[in-house]
Image 1 (cartoon, rainbow, N blue to C red):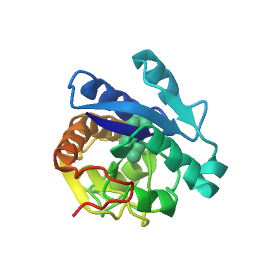
Image 2: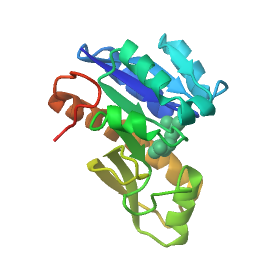
Image 3: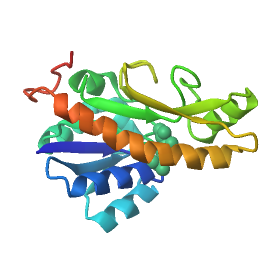
Image 4: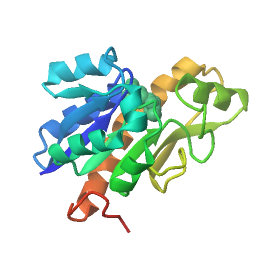
Length: 201
Ligand code: GRF
């Protein structure tokens, strides 16, 4: 049984989808959802599914990474899944969970990634540039934002009458299919946990 920790700051629709998807599978489960916001909707979604959540304020995420790592170790976490977590991950956490932490980004990385490229802004930029295709990318988390090795990426067409809102909704649908598949594939190849910090090849 693999234990997943999800990190989320907002709505948490991906977190809910992943928690539901792995609930019945028997080989993995969402053990904890960690946030930096007490009022994020993700808490309500998880309460309905009986998944525990934990909030640390931004100062802890930024300055006390060991407290976060202690909590991840206490929950025996194999894989950290970022799902709309709007805070840079402290390098100490990245180091401790290298190869065991993934993110999903709502574009075809490396396009439309990096600082300031999140949420609706990504889709607005895609439409403004006249792109005919966009998509979602699952990648490992490194110290460089949105630059880690790509695990899976899939694209959809940008339709002539798409707005940022319609595109965001269709990308969410794509993510609900892509992210659990990517997680499943990573879990199949995950080396034994050992101590946090063991790397993937
Ligand atoms: C998703 O679109 C994901 O690509 C991005 O943040 C969004 C989170 O949405 N990283 P939700 O909170 O899962 O609804």
